Image (cartoon, rainbow, N blue to C red; front, side, top):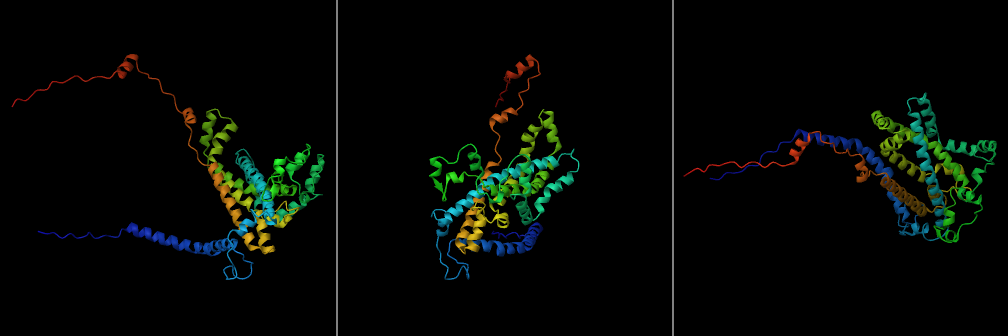
Length: 392
């Protein structure tokens, strides 16, 4: 007798149909945005990448037959050839590196300080202070830059205030000297050691790399801290309001003072926000352009030139589009590298065994009597039981 096996009929689950409908609706809503990003972002980036490897002159299509592939020549011209493009890129990289090194810590610390200040319940008029601190962030960068040119001019308000305390202020936007070299000059050090002056990188000696930001760039650093701290303050305020009050109460019950509560309790809770603030600060500082274009245009003596502004001048003014695109992509690689590094620094680390041992409770002493404790420690052997053999 043979039996024929029939495959069971598969019924379409209503849940599968619902998921397919949700996926279709998701693609319908995100499709236009993805299309716009692809047309106006992804395709131009790929075209710029091709330009960085070509000798396109800016006329006609970059994909025409007259445009040839030159490989890494554009990248080599600004990194290893040692000519004027290499030196200009080294100067721009030095200026921007000092800009990042000073702006990111200062704006992060100031934003966190302002956030803690305006988040205090005992502060009256917190809404007014939050608005006042945030107001420079929503003001036009061009307007702030023009105002800064007046404030830091030779006869401006800043030098006038400094004269009240006996300080003769510099001619800020016309002084190309580095502030570190100026500080060393006050103690009689005007030339660096031989191992710093004879070795160079990107067309600049290491002594020139250590000059610090110029006086003109220092004024722009003050402006960047002034205009960006308000935005990051709001991010810190939102994070502080998500920290429960019972955590601070528990720390107070354990005897922690104000600084210990901030360093051991509040700051670790702000790690995700701190990562966001530093990341945005790094990206914004390495891409600084509009303040330079509006204010100094690289003067004095190219001490305020940044890679973003140098990429613009190389491409749009000098018509060397390959060099300009290469600078832009090197800048992109620098931003990615710094972001990955600070992500590694701020990563969640496992608690070490030595620190975890501090939070372990000591073993509780036994409350039973000595006789009971002794009987608990001595194992008991069960008595043998008699068995009867069943006779067969």
